[in-house]
Structures are given as C-alpha cells and as structure tokens.
Image (tube, rainbow, N blue to C red; front, side):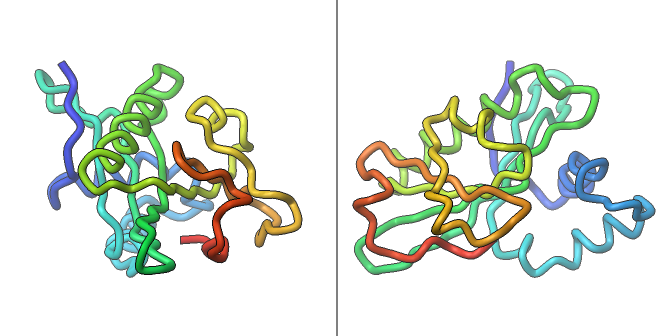
Length: 164
C-alpha cells in the first residue's frame, strides 16, 4: 500500500537525492545535500512524499509553494518533482502529483496551480496543465505551465510567477 504524506525532517536527505542526477550539476553528493539543506527556497515550501507503507521506501516527492498574488485567489506552485532513478517511469510521480493537486483543491479550495518544467510539457499535459503563451514565458530553459479546473489562463488577471 502507498500513502501520500508531508515529508518529515528525517526524509529530507532521501528527498533531496531523488533529483541529484538532474540538478546536482557535477557536484559531489555531500555538497549537493548541503546546498539543498541550506536552501531558503526549499525551506519556504511544503514537501510531500509518496511512501510504500510496508517498506517505508520513498517513491516520489515534490514541493508546494504558496503563490497568492491577490487576496481572493489561492494559487500554488509545484516544483522539484522527482523519483529515485531506479523508480522512474513507474507512475509514482503521476500518483503524487494527482493526489497533491486533488488534496489542495479539496482542503484549501485551491484552484490555480503553476509549475516550471525543464522536461518539456508533454508529461504535465496528462494532468491538464497548459503552457503559458510564449509571449509571457520568463525563462529560456524552462516552460511555465498552468492548471485550473475553474479558470483558463486568459481569465486570470495576475502576473505569471517567477521561478519558485
């Protein structure tokens, strides 16, 4: 059985190392861990994990940031989506993304989600994320994407968030 839960402090080394091969940029693993542990950006968000309950193995993780651009909107940013290298392409990240979005929609009445993708947009289109129009993209190496059950991108009146 698998559960989605908030990450605990004792999980964080495993969580950070899920993305080491992609985001480590030729750093030694201990230096990469130190960078992640010291990251003010990572401390601002709330980490979630997908855990195999029998083995306690962490299968996937992501971070959620509060991006409320106005008083009447609840907006979240999703980032650092990763699974350990040996567990990729097994659907774990997809399970986690769906569960976290559904949970935030129900518990927090959150209707607006952004993410930045360095892997292209196809993977996230499965979750009904759409690419922000090219004219509003802020970065060359990542694609800002948006998802909402209630709003389309043309109807929102706030600025696209910076990379979070």
